[in-house]
Amino acid sequence: MNAGLGTEAVVDRVSQLLHDRIGLRPELSLRGRLRRCIRDDAAARKQDLDAYLDTLLDGDNALQGLLNRVTVQETAFFRHPEHFELLMRDLLAPRDGPLTIWSAGCANGQEAFSLAMLLEELDVDGSVIATDVSTDALLRTEAARYTERELGGLSPERRERHLTPDGGSWLVNRNLRARVRTLRYNLIDPIPTQIRGGQVIFCRNVLIYLSPEHAEAFLARVADAMPAASLFLGAAESIWQLSDRFETVRAGDTFSYRLRPAVVTSGQPTGAGGVATARPAARTRQAASTQYQQTNTGRSLEAEVPVGAFTVGLTSTLESDDDVASALLLSRAGQQASAAGNAQGAVVAFRKCVYLTPSDPLAHLHLGLALETAGDHRYAQRAYAAARHALAQVDPAQVDLAAEGYTTSDLLQLLDAKQHGSRRANSDRQVLTS
Ligand SMILES: C[S@@+](CC[C@H](N)C(=O)[O-])C[C@H]1O[C@@H](n2cnc3c(N)ncnc32)[C@H](O)[C@@H]1O
Image (cartoon, rainbow, N blue to C red; front, side, top):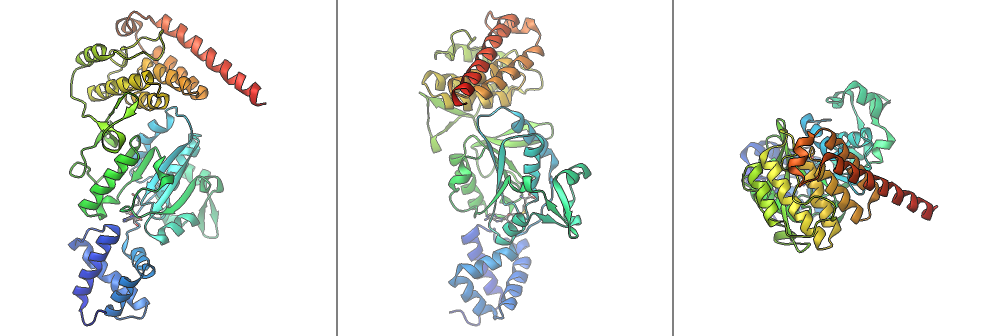
């Protein structure tokens, strides 16, 4: 029972409670807001501050009410538009199965619906899980209703396509609402199972509210539970003092984060959280090529495909040396996974390779082969088509140099055979299932 504590002592106790329960940074700049929220919430409950503190310490209902007041729901449609442009690269890459995007700290839902708009516009099979610790924020997201003022960031075309005017506000269309699920999740808790399968994480402008130890622990959980995911943080948030397990994936002036390339041995991931991470050493393309060819002792995916020819020499100047070096590590991991019969591991590694060096036809080709081995003929075919497209952009003389004796025409023949094979497998399956 608290009595006669005085306002500042109550604010201290509540600040500590919020730090412990949602990781809130006990910062001076947030203290004024906290004091106001405490006063308002206590007044709404018709309690003095001491009684209010007792209620808060006693039960979760009162705490949730305060969380709904304290948390900041500032957001907008397509906030930091460059992140959405970068995400499109991920969305356009072939993948096996539906995509799950996590909007962590979704506020009133504009971020989640912006993501759903991209999925819809690009006709991607995928959905968004919108989580927040504020139940008010989740209710707003579920309502999917916005005032004119809250539509900032939406182009007239998008507004026209995805929302409908309804009683003085705008309602997000049903098809988009169907792509977004909400879930109450506190970032300091273990990552829920339904989120773990996600491939993209938007956790923007949330970590700034957390104390460094909570933000650090959250990033460690993400790295362990979702090693293949792309992570987007807010423009003012930096990961570097919190975790060295991620690296940047740059595109123009913006970037996302990925776990540093995994070293897969004997088909089994190793190290913390199942993945051993390695910082790719900066090296030239030629040095990377030599190292790859010397260490490539694993069985190739298919005897007829050039091994060790990955990326090097075929990538455009758009791809940085760091990306090429990382792709090289991944291609080795893919080869090893494949040699160990770990088809899914190979798919993951080669998919990352394609992501890093999208202009390399051999990267697409190996992804196609891995997908085929994993039984995903539909996406294998897309990868072969991407390989063909990338091959058309490459100078044939470069192919001769990089592809260990294979010419452009050899590769095209191989792709013809593969694409024909994939189509046949698809139609065989259709006959079997009809
Ligand atoms: C400023 S908004 C960011 C909204 C959106 N991500 C964006 O960038 O536009 C911060 C959100 O983080 C949520 N939040 C703060 N602490 C949290 C925690 N510990 N767990 C989950 N969500 C939290 C708040 O409720 C709020 O909705």
